[in-house]
Amino acid sequence: MNRNSFIPLLFAGDINVYSMARAFHEEYGIKPHVYGKYSSWPCAGSRIMNYKADGKADEQDTFLKIVTEFAESRREEQILLIGCGDSYVQLISANMDRLPENVTAPYISVDMMNELIHKEKFYAMCEKAGIDYPATFVHRAETGSGFELPFEGPYIIKPSNGIEYWRHPFPGQKKVFREETREGLVKTLSAIYGSGYGDSIIIQDFIPGDDTYMRVLTNYSDQWGKVKLMCLGHVLLEEHTPHGIGNHAVIITEHNAELEDRIRSLLDGMNYVGFSNFDIKYDQRDGRYKVFEINTRQGRSNYYVTAAGANLAQCVVEDRVYNHPMDFRRIEKEFLWMVVPRGVAFKYIKPPEYKDKMKKLIGEGNVVNPLYYKGDRNFVRRLTLLKTQLSHYLKYRKYM
Image (cartoon, rainbow, N blue to C red; front, side, top):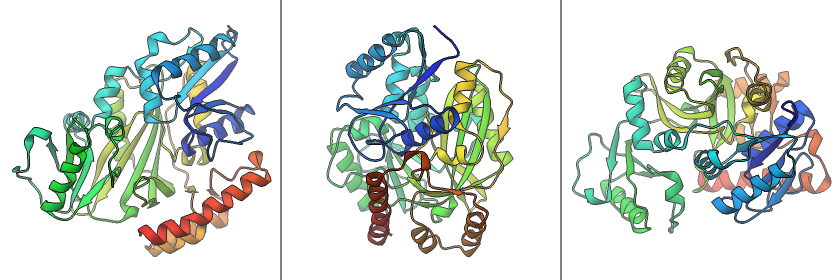
């Protein structure tokens, strides 16, 4: 096997995997092979990847069959396996010992992953590490409705186990619920447990502030368990549809050494490897940044890091393919990332100082929409992108 020759094999079908494929295409001029469940936007029909849809791609037997057959047909190549969705990342981590010899996958053990993605356990780690998180109450089915909370409403309700949660659909299901009253809280708990979901549910104090109080922190830790890249993004606008709530729509990169150092210490202390992504909110009541969760992968908005000067594909290739030692980097360059039309951004982002900063960055050319890529243009994609962009006007009008 030629250790310096590699082929990216990516899994998922959304903007996350498209952004990673674009990073590989920009840096190395190669087309990653990508598998997702559906023949849908933005991957289907793309010229920068070889995309195939398989409705069972996120099931273990099918997933392993795809990876094994792909690797065996290219035995002289190193296969760089990257998951761009929670289910795929978990599949990779759970089957590390079953992957072919020529497959490289930059992921933590399944035991560590299960600890981190379970919000109740993750908050216990934050407590030990001195990392702030919202006031939290852990509810279980046997707790019933007679419990007392250490905070008043509004209440944020979300499952401890997101993967298990989405396996049990129910009417009105959302990624995160906000309830103003105790009655609404109990009703939401009943709906979640009534769907068949059996793990615990997190009830949290609502941190006031609009989307502009949110932050996202993307990191890469090398194969020796040390953080080598950190890029903090200041979220200015999120999506607000029921299934998309919390997904980023507009980000400007920024720098906060104190916050970054705390997260770095947490990751280095557990010898974490690969990509990690933290959702954070600034609490104006006490001036602290509070962590909501960790994703054991790069986030949907990962191209904000590549655009700001740290190509994420290059990062993992240098570490896992070429085995090059990497210097630690913090990204401090300001860059504007957005996946909605500028008209939507300027209408729904309210603080004037952020609008001024956006205008400045646009004027300097420091702005990107990862879906607009000159290397991936044809009439059909342009038309689909136009329709997608226009649909944001309707979505924000309806949900904001």
